[in-house]
Picture (cartoon, rainbow, N blue to C red):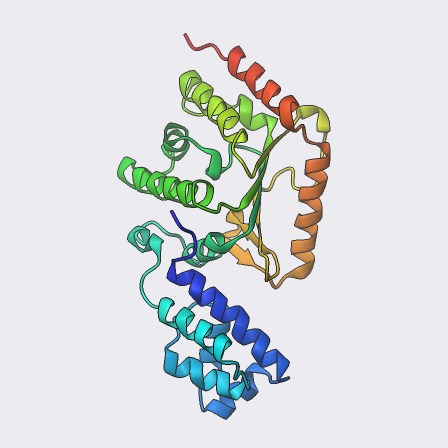
Length: 284
């Protein structure tokens, strides 16, 4: 499934290109809005990538920012035409939390995804049965199935597309022992981890109990990396919070993830540990 056709990706291309073009002319958002007789919020929404952009408005912006190269103008006009319409996740709007739809747009465009969860297997790696068992105590069965469908769609788009991003997972050993859904479900989940670890562009590591205490012992997080933009940090525990503006917070999590990778087991050591735990689960 191609990752470059969703309207949100075209909105992101426009967001980056127009912000850079404005900054190249040393105009503030307010100055650009005043010159075009637009509201400041309109410029802000365009540069945040949260709205589509008409070709007419795009041309006005390009004139304001003195972008005249015909090839570049044509590329951006094509992106503007492709920015309209519904994103792939619109059919799941009934279960999306506040801000999560916007996060999915960023996720769809990421060149790398770095994930750590200290309690359970990260969502990208969960089997359907494991995910259902995890949701069962909190939501009704029908809603749980919808959430699992969305999670599966994310997995397929992210890890099985034509050009998947690099994905880096650090799974805490505690998550390997915690029998979510019972022995059979947990054994299948652990086997799935082993299978996923063999895929190209996937790095799966296990943080063993022997690693001791460390930053983020109690917090899961996702870092999205981009070829042409700053990293984005996603914190589900803080109300599906996504940020790329809190630089100190992002740097702390970048440093944390690199430290986790340094002390975690990788390669055969990681899969051997997963296999031992899997084989030690009583499946009777």
